Length: 386
Length: 131
Image 1 (cartoon, rainbow over the protein chains, first blue to last red):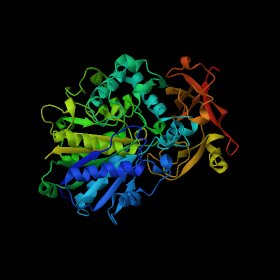
Image 2 (spheres, one colour):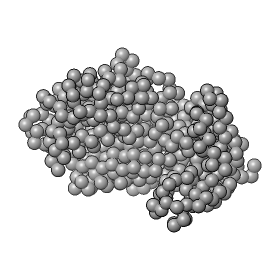
Image 3 (tube, each protein chain N blue to C red):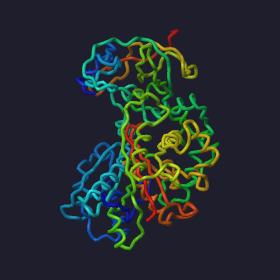
């Protein structure tokens, strides 16, 4: 396999972007990544998008985005693993480059979620769960993660204060991110008294509905060196699935696909979790960040909440998580999220993160974890400074 | 929902038909073609027991439109006495009285009313065992 690099990164502002369409958002991010990288050709493009069909009635994004990006006959395709579609786009780009099939690949992600009602968005998102055996009975995504939260609280004593600490920390980080949808701080009291969505999860435990796109340019380390722009290495890629319905799993207080994908990615990279300096993880709900931090092996099972409460995952903690603000504060345009995580890691490892959220002590090694559904799909990538 | 889609689920939703793997004994619900534990492909039909206990639950307060008249409603995962776990609404009790570990029974109830196709869709819900 050839050594793989990310040499340019770009994203749109995340939020309710009424004046930009699905194609506008994607092309803006792709152009930003291309310009940032200095490449003068593209061989292939992968587009992570959960559901252009349900959100705006548009499928066939390969053709549409290549067309509007103005690259004639570019081979391009949309890839999908629900909210992990962005991570999957990176994996496909990694495989294209590592195998020698392509030299320069755009891995992008996009979602346009505010062109339909909240109810329509709830329906579209719920298609990532088991339609006949969860959604049919009235399950929603906050509901499924709430089932996980209650089980975790029951088994390990995880508390409201611990859930709130995740939201407070991510909003603090996101307040320094000019691309974030909700770049403001919240207090633990505000989280704990916000509107209940699905007990025990409140609105400030939930990531928002967001429009946005992100893109990175993936190439070989050799080409990246010649381009003369800052680049990072992609050392490992892991991908795993789990049973789609939460109730079918042996233990709903852990995320097995995350455990397996992380193990594969770390093995490929030749690293251990303790070698990692920081991570961008899929905090679609506060409980998700806690369970993910345990499933990745950053903290022991049942200790993720306590670690968040003690500040171990803060920017100056022992293992910073989501310096970007995470899905909670930065926003969660589902198909774009996995790539937006890579954009943050690219910025952090090349010392380009805006404001005071740039991690001190020059981080060298980072992990991105992106998951779909209630953890039915997970992508993990390991990246290193050049 | 299109009527055939609901009709296809009658064996599970109306009659609680589960399938036991003839090799390793794992019980799957709904029906599958392959045992998720051992990969065997032969099963025998077995009706689910109608009692179990709550493993976890939530109260859905922001509901999809077809359930908005019922919100807030409780949703639970219960483990039945044969080890099968399933998700369903937990009804006929105050949401504040629900606890992990409480014993429940399965009852046949109306789950959805689809005005577009005129389909009334029935399936199982949990009720407290004492009820």
